[in-house]
Image 1 (cartoon, rainbow, N blue to C red):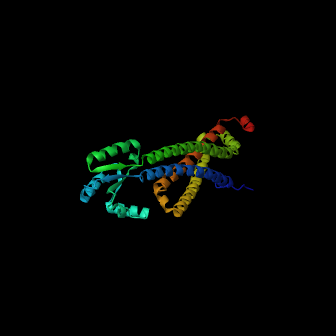
Image 2 (image 1 turned 120 degrees about the vertical axis):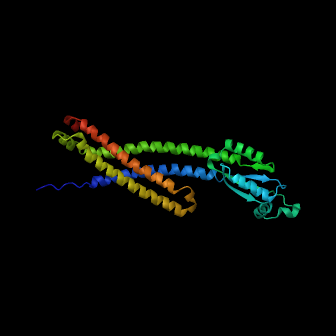
Length: 290
């Protein structure tokens, strides 16, 4: 009675794919946080605004012209003009009382709120930007910028980035070790088959081919499943908090999914190649003592 050929997608294939998928999912989550943290840092720095206080002697038309000039600067992301009347209204709503009633005049000045591009939201850039703005317009009374907040944000973002990158590097090594062990055990069970194929004259490349192809498909399936879970998690996050779209962008997800897929295929193929070559070099007497 002839023996039924073993299916390519057997139980060992399924279990290897699932275990590899779990490792890739963990790695993908760390890559996601690294990418999201970078977007978050850009978002935070671009939303720290500074105020340019304008002299009362400057006409509104000149202020608006000055605002247009600022919008053309490479370091400016966005500007907002706040008139004296608007500033008084906002402060009245915030304080619950009208300061003009007991002072007899509007104590506030017109201003332009400026948000910088992320690359310029640092102490050195802000210093020369303030000097440049004041040199271009003598009607600028003062420029208020939350320097302490900016320094604290940049410092914390730097620390978080270092921790996440270190975690990603460590997890990459752990992932390699775990996936390598999974594949090595699978190849170990075929060590005598590999030796038999050597005895009948099969070339090393011929012996490697089915193992590499099988593990490449394991990597593809595992990465696809991990990417599907990551997309689902990202969708739930954005649906729960729509504002996260500024951080969890399509670009982030494309990079994360691409990294997981490439890593999954490369790592499974590389680990399979290393394990197969190990047994190809062994003598039959050595196969019984490993």
